[in-house]
Amino acid sequence: MYSPALGIDIGGSGIKFGIVDIEQGTLIGERIKVDTPYPSTPDAIASVIREVVSALDWKGDRIGVGFPAIIQDGVSLTATNIDKSWIGVNSEELFHKTTGHRYYVMNDADAAGIAERKYGRIKNVRGTVLMLTLGTGIGSALFYDGKLIPNTEFGHIEYRGDLAEHWVSNQARKDRALEYDDWAKELADFLEYMILLFSPRLIVLGGGVSSNFDVLKHHFTHLRAPVVSASAYNDAGIIGAALVAYPELLEAFV
Ligand code: BGC
Image (tube, rainbow, N blue to C red; front, side):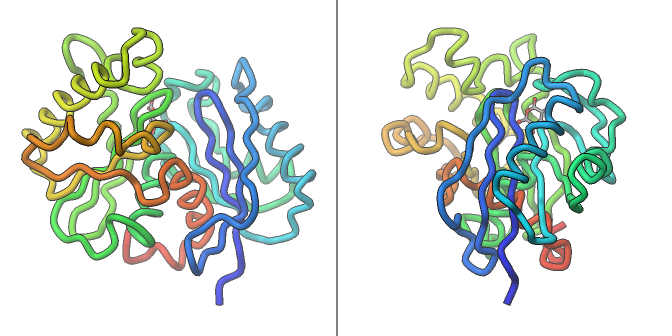
């Protein structure tokens, strides 16, 4: 029996916290959402984490974090939708120093992907599977035969002369004042390009817009790969973050 873990999903616009039942892959109680501070410096984010973790009176030893950057050995190597001063910072050490708890950190989209791999759409799917999270940016998690190839960053692929996420993230939809249907058509074009490059057996969409999936899915039916929404919808990020705090459960996936 694995005890619940605290999952923290750090995004460009919000930071979400939830206690996760690791056996079931579900949230226990309500999630808490706090605006990402601006500027989103390491100290500012660490203080938000300190406040919420202490308000939750979290006594467990498992806290996992999904972070919107390339993460290697706890260190952020990039910073796109987060303050540039994160580059080179070891967030596992910083959060530990700030709150006294131990933290396990992974790229946010990879974390959402491992939630789907363990509990949802990617469970027992062989071959290539691509998960994309559509939020402030576009995050990606690529699996082959159930193993994650970490830090893929397909939202940063050059697309129509710019970063793909500047065209088709959920933020881009808002910035470009696109209707959902027009945005979904553009997203379908981007997915077609991803399919050309990787020939995935399955594409899973997560992030804030995945809960509108039912009204958008007809835009994806002509594509060569089936497109589904994350089974945990936007909570995949929190659930996956909590799972990151159990490295012993990830051995088959990462
Ligand atoms: C970041 C990724 C992240 C994605 C979603 C991108 O801008 O570079 O690391 O996964 O946004 O948050």
